Image (cartoon, rainbow, N blue to C red):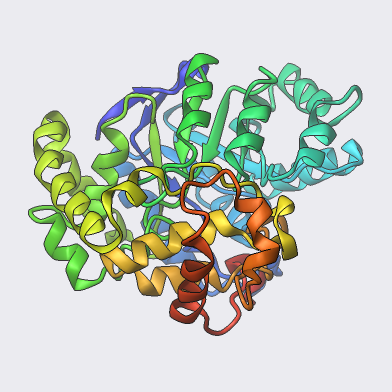
Length: 394
């Protein structure tokens, strides 16, 4: 395992994190007696194998159903000083509710403290206000720090780069969990802001949100050789010193092994990735053009400024990589969350786009004349059954 300084927390963070949202019994709370013995045994095997690999950062959340409860059966049996434990609790308008939920998390985890406490799903300006206003949730978090129950405070987010940067620039947070990987570079300015504040940077779900890479299309497999698509994406992220760790959500112990095998190239990332990145650029350019690859997101407003709140930026991103790298199944998974996942995946699909109504919102885009047709093509390519977030799927 390789390790990096996790910003001003000064934690020695493994570059691969044990994500806690795949191996639990259910996405809702359950009676402890309902946890199947084989499921608990698998979870504990995941933890022990991860620790054998040097992956001592274990990350979960109150929103991950029985994950905390089940981790609470094994974590107290392990040497506490060898673990970095993180949980996440959603901010609330009433700070007392946030405090009560944190207490519930700790009761499930059966720990005296967590190394990292994140405000979970800080995706809107309103949530930033709930945290940072006088008497808000941050005051609860600071009290927990003084009591020794939470050592470092951060936030996780699926929000826009503008919103993430706004939260970072409050200076209140020690670290951030956010999305950034090969098929989503839009949040790089937020990572740069986090670096200026000496914050830890944790990348969410590079396997799944980063392209559904556990089921890669044949084209992507060929382009990424000698790496697998998962290994390429891991090393692509870790090639940047501003990135400190990647969350690996395992459902079984062997799910970690492909990622750990990527670290064989850790000391020669640049020369390993160079030819692969060149092939990927060529593939994208051949499908959509180099100018589109370089500038497609320029001048696009947020979905709230677009008629019908169509999430144009997200749809164009999905179309770009579905069209060029055959990431169609990933595109479908993400596209059909639009309109079905609240602030976690805001905005709506393209449907019937009226080019005339859309024109004012696209006035600053270099591709304003092309975008309506692309939105229509994207809708045809990606529309399918409505999707729900995993936490809503039970």
